[in-house]
Every structure is written in C-alpha cells, then in structure tokens.
Length: 452
Image 1 (cartoon, rainbow, N blue to C red):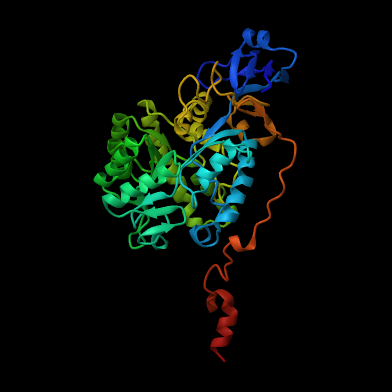
Image 2: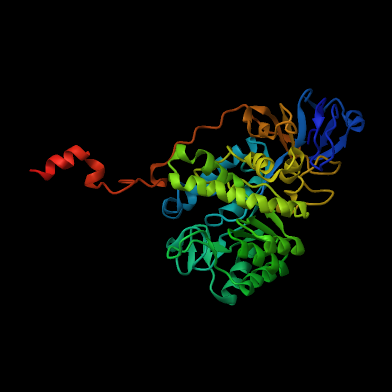
C-alpha cells in the first residue's frame, strides 16, 4: 500500500490537545506512521504528497447513530410497507458512498431493515462497496409497545427494523440469533409511543427485562445501545448495564447520577430534532410540533450539560437515514448543536465526533480509530478552514478537500449518479386532510347555498 505525506497543515489530532500548525502526517500501510519531523523524514520517493498548507488536518468523523438501510422515508408507513429487501440493499450501498464523501469514515448503524447492516458492513470491508467503516446491529428489540410506530408494530415477530420479544426465553434466543449472524451491537427501544396515552414516549420495558438483554449480550462480548426518550428509561437503562444511550430526552438528576455511576456513554442525537425545529416548516412538518422539538432540545441539553461536566462520555450521532436527515447531508451538524446547546467548545465537540466515537466502533486503544497518533488507523480529513474557529465548517462539503480512509484517498471529484426516487418506495397520499365543505368553499359560497 502506498504511503501518503500530508504536509504543511494545522493538526487537530482528536485527543483534545491544542492544534499544532505546520505539522506533517505520514500514513503508511493504512496507519499513522509518524507525525512532525519524523513524518517528513519517513517519506520516500514513492510517497504521495498532499499539500495541506493553510488547512486543518484531523481524524475522520465518526457518526454513532445512522440508519443507512432505511432509504430516507417520510414516515413509518413508508418504511414498513414500501421497501423490498433486494432494492434496499442496493440503495444502502449507493448511500454508503455519500457518507464517506461527507468526511465520515466510520459509522454505527445499530438497527436496520432485514440484516442489511451486517451485510453492508462486510461488503465494505471486502472492498465490494465504497463506504465508511461500519459497526452494525440487527433489528431493534421491542416489547409490543415499543418504538415510535405505535400500533403499526405487530404484537410479535418482526416489523421493519424491529423484532418484538416476549418473555426471557424469546429475548435470549433473539439476542443469540442476532449475534450468530454477525451483529456488533444489540439495540433496545426502551420507550415507545402508545396511541391511547397523550404526551411523549413512555418506558415500555421493566428493569429486569433490560438486565436480561444486557447480561445475555455481555456474556457474548456484545454491547448494548438503547433508545431512551424519557428520564425513567435513561435511569433504568444505565442501571441495567446499557453501554450507550441514545437521546436521553428530558432526563432528570437521578438519571444523570445513574449514568455517571454506571459509566454509560451518551449520544443525544439532537440533529434530527434540530432539523425539524429549524427547517420543518419547509418540509411540511405540523407547525404545532416545531416548538415542541425545540423545547425538547433545550430542556434535554441543559441536563446533558450537567452530565458532561460530571465526566460522562459523549458521542455524536445524526440519525441519518430519514427524509429529514438524508444521507450525506447532516452528519456534522451534531457538533454545531453540542456547541450551541451544551456549551461545548469546538474542540470538545470534535473529540466527541472522533476519539469518543471509537467506543461505538469498538476500536479503542493504541491501534484503534479516532485520533491522529502513531499506530492508529489512518483515517484523515483535510479541511479548508478552521473548525476550532467555526465548527460549522465541517458541514460544508466543498471544504472537505481530502478524505483518507485507512490510508486510501477517496475520489471526491467524480459525481455520484443522481438518485431518482422509485415511485413504489413512497407513500402517495390522496389527501393531507379531509375535504370538508368549509375548507373547499368560501364563506360567501356557503352563505349563498344556504339560501337556495
């Protein structure tokens, strides 16, 4: 494998150490071979050279919450009833290229349609598909009350990305089955929307059930991630042994204490809520929901700021894969939201998106990913700008001038063919609301007709 010398740039190594202007980075055989003067000295005549003068050199981003197999649905009906396995597999491979070109060199895709996540991961590792390094889960574990789809989830069996588990034996068998077929993580939907109950999601697992999942997975060297959209769910997930908590919406001080005591990590995934709150009006989101989404971010972020101060490890995740978070578009927005809503410095946000993301990839340690240190995997970005001055620069695809994954430069110039939506993959609504007479006719017309 050829070596690459990236010279003249300002290195932000992902460890949290101060930026180092004018430092060279040598990547050889897929790993960081040397930095600084040793890098220049180690280059030979066959070494490719990348001029990073005036630019930032940093680790590839790690997105710890993606759904690359979903196909960007507008809602659950579309996701569950308008997808085929074969087409979804091909679309997932197409989408993986977009992720890599956005500067994301690693992702965790913790629940998927069918078992496409594991297969896509393996296809990328085999060189069949171009995309980011992946860690994958299978179907998310649910009770029949779990998730955001309400009564669309079957009482048992699999619906889309979810498998309903009833009783300890079924839970244990499903976890073992998923591990048999290659998952890196087990995902639990700890909260769900119950149509007969007004308000946000409620906890739909008890702590003994959560412990069963965690104990079974951990005995087989597999980590557990949980979708938690209220305080009780975050508290009980941490106490049960969940390794990574998504969302942690509305958590209280008791939940923070449980997370700190358990040593769990957190991935708030503000991006999807932020996109809805800030841009939902442009895509037809119900107006009354916009303030709800914004309030959830603000209330949750205030508490998560306490968790961060208490030493909890934070990872960045975008929940890429829905219509509101299309693939390749919003992966780096979570850094901006950490800075804006949690008061993190740009450096702290970068650490969350690089070094801390190694936990999601299960690739921590001296030979892992996430930092530019000798011996680490050679995932490198060259950015035309200074993310320490303005972290939003990482969202500008034009500013990502080099993406190097495991020592190989990514072709950023050749256009990816345009994806035209397949008609059968989308819900075609006859009407968005009932066509009542009062909606169809003016007051004058109604008045005139009343006198006929």
